[in-house]
Length: 325
Image (cartoon, rainbow, N blue to C red; front, side, top):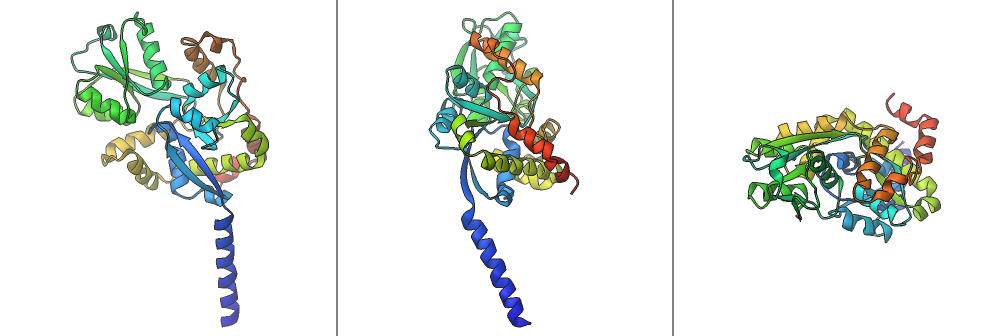
């Protein structure tokens, strides 16, 4: 009996060791600490991708201007987010492919100095943006246009490092007079005395999953399993709030559990379990991109997308089985 037990333990340890050694190393970039990226951190931190044979390292590569080149050079194999930067690259002929999205809508807020009373008051002011023209820049530019201001002439944009936290610090210090922030920093800024001048909730892709055309062509089965792992991670996040909040706390480095709860609720109510982008969000995204590059308006909702992988997973019944557990 002892011999049988010893053999069983030895075989089990060998199998686990072999599985660990065989795990495919993947590097996944994300451009900012933002809501649409939260499920990827939970999936990685809870080891869920390992169930699908992957050792995934998530890497902060600040801004689309840096994240997209990292993907193109194969320094990373996947890029989550940087949706505006990816669109810009595609318009320039760079062979990237979108596979799916984490969300089809995003919420954010324009925060300003307390003395600012209206969007028109921003004329002549300095507004903070990230490095690269990302989703927050696109929304800010649209908001200005909708209120009769020309983003190219009536305001000055200042690129600020350090992600959203850097922009919030710059706003508090008076270096800038306004910036667009995602949850939970919009709530944190409001609680610290800044003004929420406008809220922005639109149908647009968030947390897009991007690869190079060559990578998905050469590694289709690998990519499908990677997407399955992400879907499994989303299921975990939806069902395990307390454990997920610990991950959010780690990445946002914020001990305000009310703010983390706000972030969790904002994220989970928008998550796409099957990673499927809808035509409304894609169209809005392209129309916003066209404000800076008119070529974007000429593309259809299916251009630049390869939805066949998430559709194959959907048809297999994989997601339904996940939520039956």
